[in-house]
Image (cartoon, rainbow, N blue to C red; front, side, top):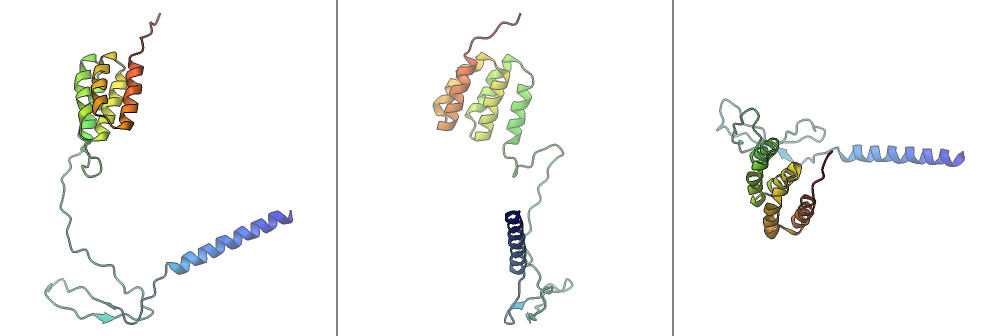
Length: 171
């Protein structure tokens, strides 16, 4: 029982020390020699404003710097992926649409994405062919195996072996 009490008290002391250390390190105390420039008035942007000294206890007066560049606007339609966040999402959507048809004649078109420059598109094509499960995809996977990296080659080899297995009859 005393061991548990000591453990509890030790944890309580450690938590409180951590809290006070974190709290004291987050405070910023500006020095007297620092200066802050006030932004120019909106009516006269060419007006030059002299820097003023920062008082020792005036932490609320410090303002974050104003960005000097303006971001360019990007128009994105509803349902369209944001290109900076999801690169090559259109190609992956096409692959998924082709896979969702579950037709063997879609295999060559899906397999054409196995040679895409982006690894995520190649992975989507490989997974799409596996989802279909047609053994007609084996020659395309073997062709992709030649140019694949070590990690991709390992996955492609496993997929080739799986799709080469004989199909089972359901009675």
